[in-house]
Image (cartoon, rainbow, N blue to C red):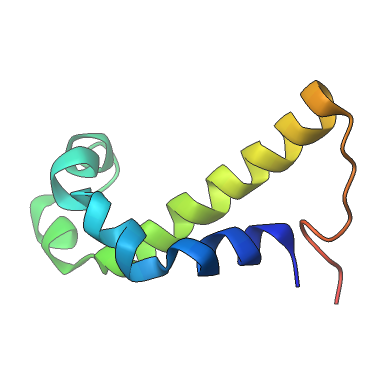
Length: 78
């Protein structure tokens, strides 16, 4: 199991989602790429998963650059 999966499962997606008001915090940024109707139809759970994945990749880079941790289990190639 990857470190990212362990971290997300440890907190739980429901908890992560409960801490974010995605519609409020992302709507302004997303408005540049989507019109009002498209924004209304967005799956905010999918948006949250994208945010988790992007931040996981940033964490992997920081682990390597700042701490010298090159852990292949962060993003295994299975």
